[in-house]
Image 1 (spheres, rainbow, N blue to C red):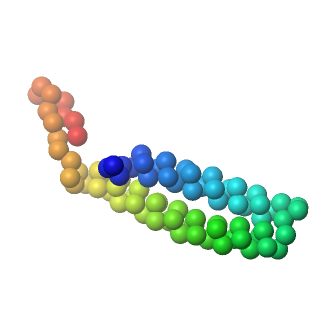
Image 2 (cartoon, rainbow, N blue to C red):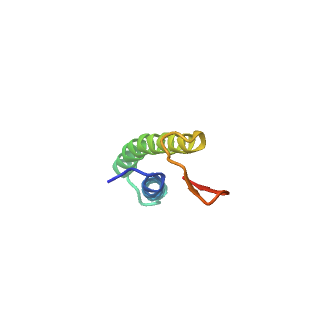
Length: 82
């Protein structure tokens, strides 16, 4: 499967939701120290993944902005598509 900016944004959305759910666990009134520690470890790992996804999205957008790797197609004399 080709990796697209849309795929990366989907993954980023899922990671963000998981982080929010873990933050709810950490803030829960019935959370034990063990629950908080486990949620914190998972949050740290997800934040690393989140940062990697953001960097990949930025790189993809920069590539589009520069026009790297994209073919331009003409339709008539005035319309161009990538």
